[in-house]
Image (cartoon, rainbow, N blue to C red):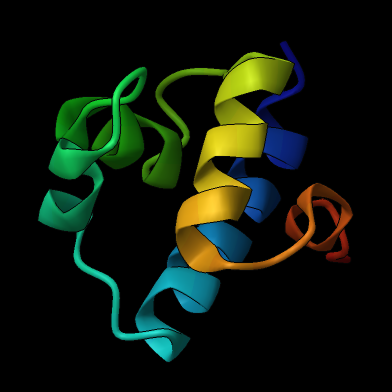
Length: 71
């Protein structure tokens, strides 16, 4: 697991979520992902699967590729 990459992804995800005024608890209504999963991803404590990436993108109303568009 590339910790630096995870940290960059985590920071980007949190930024996107806050820009859209979406709370971690808003993921509770979505089957397949939990608030605790989002919290662990946003703190770079875990990696996620492609299917969870798609769920997150759907909740944020963005394309999955936009989640990976960070430097």
